[in-house]
Amino acid sequence: MEAKEEAVKQQEKIETREAVEAESGKKKRGRKPKEAVFEPQVEAKANITDPESRSHYDSFRVYTGV
Image (tube, one colour):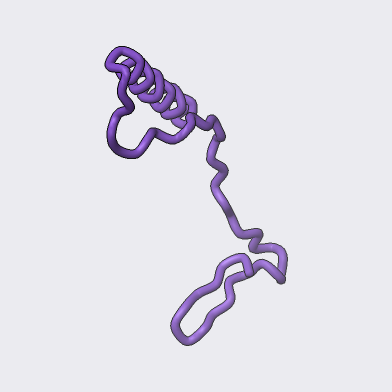
């Protein structure tokens, strides 16, 4: 649900910017807003039952899912 709401807000920003630019006849300064993308985020989880995807330990780091 959250990703869809953010995509709608982003699309509104783009439409507002285009309307202001069309009204003034000049381009607005600054970075243009990115395109609205509706992709639900999937949480990445390690498969702990698979021996090849378990956590690997280094002297400084922990590598999960490697």
